[in-house]
Image 1 (cartoon, rainbow, N blue to C red):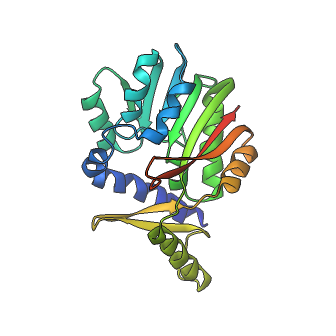
Image 2 (cartoon, one colour):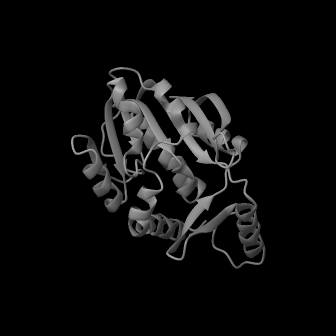
Amino acid sequence: MDKKYAEYLLEKTRQDYNQIADDFSRTRTYVWEELGFFREYALRGDKILDLGCGNGRLYELLKENSVDYYGIDNSEKLIEIAKIRYPKVKFLVADALNLPFPDSFFDKVFSIAVLHHIPSEELRLKFLEEIKRVLKPEGFLIITLWKFHAFKDLCLISKYAILKLFGKSKMDWKDFFEPWGKKTERYYHYFSKKESACLLEKAGFKIKKCDIVRNRRGNRQNIYLIAEK
């Protein structure tokens, strides 16, 4: 992907989340049941970065574990919402590709549904390398990615593949836009388990686990990876 177009998509994603922040937050007032496993990796006293924290909902799951929690997002509107919900928590507006923390600062980095919003392999590797930089030696990254399986999502992926084939799309293969109602279209990259694991390994992480987690109804599915620095 052309670098300038990738940078445009990054900025578009930030603007999109500012635009839909209120609606987005209302659909995520609590941590979904299938993401409860994050609590298992939050040990008392851990310094944890919630990277792409949105409205801060993950803090609700972790606060009883007495962790030192930091939440960052590049959407100013979502951070405003997070600060209102949890006024005593450390929330920052920040760029995930240039994290405002020193080397080896965190025990764990948690990231829910963020990596597939990063366009191009080059920028995805930069994202992961920044995470690796701020993690302590033998620190852990716990990351989730949407597993797109609904018919409408597969149709969108196919649509943009056809556009790419005929030279009508500047995006990479398996990239697509998904509408948020009539307000905007969010950029995504479709990941398989294999591709996501290979990318983390390319960034220098050791994969400890790579699997699928589902809610009880089965209508939400996430790829999740546990990786060690």
